[in-house]
Image (cartoon, rainbow, N blue to C red; front, side, top):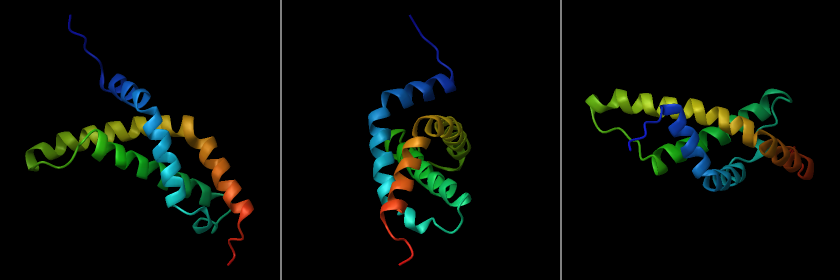
Length: 117
């Protein structure tokens, strides 16, 4: 029996199967980007921080796990479409699942450290 899944179903399954790895990458990237570097605006700074963490995780998954990379001019458009589709879906997943976790980490670091130094 042959089963056909859509692109969005593939991304959903891919994300669910790698949840542990993605969670680990979120932790790693939160430590990589110091929240004290994001204190320039009380409203936008956190969203910039979350965006940097999210994008770094998606980048790592695209190139390490999906192993999507530029092959040549002919393949470039198809690969970019796959990367864009995956990134859009992963962005929604990341926001729903990890937004509060990243927010708590960000707030805790800013509360525990004096970032004015």
